[in-house]
Length: 67
Image 1 (tube, helix red, strand yellow):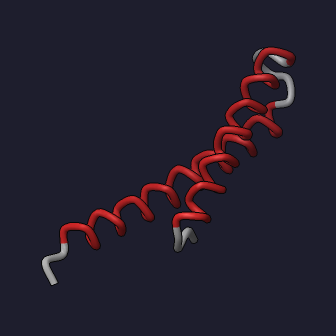
Image 2: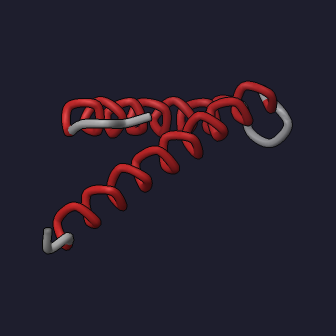
């Protein structure tokens, strides 16, 4: 779980690296090849997207909270 801006930046960098890796695998191994590897990378990407969204949402709540 992302709890601060530093972790958020690290997660974004990890996301970029995973997306680059997936793109390279898709070029090298078209349909059918390395399916489990690509699926695993997609799952990691989805998890990072969820964590980033949760952190962004919590930051919006803190910014709009009048208290």
